[in-house]
Image (cartoon, rainbow, N blue to C red; front, side, top):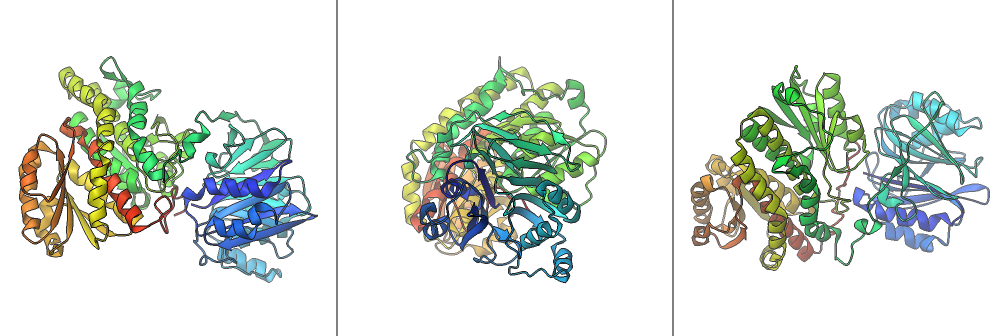
Length: 608
């Protein structure tokens, strides 16, 4: 949520800020702005709406020249989307300009204090408080000033700051919101995420909480909150800039859907060796695993759906009790964490605010933390005891696709490993599952090669007002994700229900023409799903069914059937979700929605 880009160097800054912000559009935003130092003062331009509006006002950057500046895409929290509430915000004097990602929790108290000191507020935001507070404490040294500000503000923040008095200096700080530093030659950068600056540098510093950075054209100095200098290792980005580009696809989402065979192969390939599972540098020993009495899986949104599948896999293969919690609930419900508790954290970005807070709560209570994340060096990765990376590569579209299927793959790897260590599955069973597992990338590819049939069905039903997804067991778990994908990018009301619960109220919503997506990939539940399909058909529903290709009997009941290649029933989830992703994508395209940047949503939710 929100995007920050900052630059100091020799080039014209405004085009760099605009291009960087474009690379961060996936984070979600409703306004944008830049502040550029030029002719002895900070000049600000901002606009409600998409970046193209700001770009037009700036004439592509020609109307605001200079070689130092900060830019921001805002996702409204305090105050409605508007030009005035957009970032950057300035102090009353105009001396200080600030961009901010996060939430200042005590802003009302600070606002009252600053009003009493003569400061005038023009916006409804919490960020303007920081601009005025910085001005209030400023006595010539921006780092000293920010240390004082940090002692007064409560909440989360990543800040970028420039000042009229410091034409060759840009200062930034982070706490509970992501911020990186890019290292160039005769130029340096700050950003919320790597894609914003990858065109210019692959060498970055990953800032820790409460670290302050002072950037000049030639130098980067990092301090702790006591103003002691900190030495850091340079992190070198090893993926190509083209991975964050569309590469000829109409949208990032369809590109990322089509990248899933490779992403899944990259995630599982190095971890399956000689018919067994090797989990990188995870330090969980046989003794540690045998001592586990309970597992919590904690995540948000799509990652939470991956956790639900992970629960089934771990309980089935390792026979360890598992609870799956929404991170936003886990941290507030006083969870019971005792000796022998493992907490598995799942997050694509590794920066999700509620998930990071849940990790810290669990760790404080003595739990061991194993994280499944996609972004190397992210906050969650750095604060975990063990990490299993999903090698999905950068995911730009807001709606998660390849991150989800690689999270599923990671959860199966963990479940298999634990099952083998605890001796609950035989070597023959392991060999069978692993053989099927290794075939999944090719089977997903075969589904993608037949995507035109899904596109055809979407073209016939994109005007649906309500869609219901039903399934049993693992199919219900995937129904949750299919429903989420459809609603978040097409704005069609959709819900997922356990098919066995139809008679307990849900069936009252089924009427003539209602679209029902029925998942029936589990052999031991197939007959029951046929009965459920008959139930909704009897009430006038139109049924799209998904089944394994060996179960052709379903054609007698459903109106339209999509088949997935046969595999071990435990592993069907990775294949089943792909046609659901495609269906959501094609419906959104038919409706003319903004597929990659759906309204009101953000890729990385870094505030509560």
